[in-house]
Image (tube, rainbow, N blue to C red; front, side):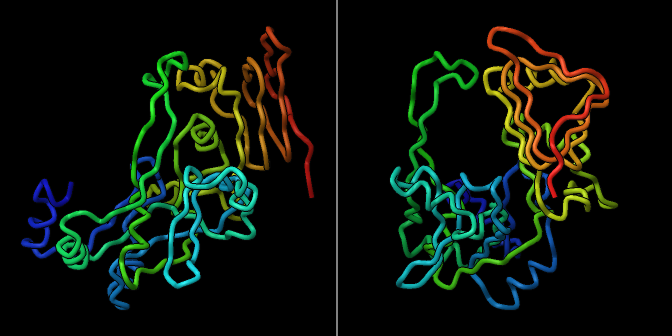
Length: 276
């Protein structure tokens, strides 16, 4: 799209040399001049920001190095079923792609010219429903390419390890609940980041998709806002559960409503078992 729309040519004509690309839902993605300086100083054509992988990230894509050299991004949709366990081993594959990407526009233009305008990124197939909010709608395949996969087509591309503060995505209601909670704070620059007490470890929130998939579902079942998750490692909610005001979750917390019944967590309840 950068080429066909003429945007790439216009940017270069106006003197722009580098571009920062990120996901719109990543609230931690901001322009960092220190990273830009690192990119320019080393003359890198493409730079990917990566962060330490944790249990919360085990299903997401990870960075790897080919035996023949060069970096490659591997997504879960590209992983064979028999390799899923190794793929999710976050100690083995230690870094994940934040999708905060920096690209040298001159290098991009040269590469596109050499490839007849096509980077040739790997194609990813994702199974979806035609209407995302209606699971009974027809099944379809969504075909896509990952922008981060461009790391394998730029000779000399690099990766830089960054703080978890640069990755605060909101892709599902589970992410939004964590972000609503006191596990996240806003700094002096109004940037969203994990609270210092979290020591860089995000809280893992697992909400039952039957009852919490949509934003309206979440708001109805958390009418007083998110519970305190500052001291929580893992919150799991199963069934139709509504939370009262002032609920505090610590350690590993699990709430489960009986099948066919609704459950209300009372105001001021303390859930979970603290872990060392």
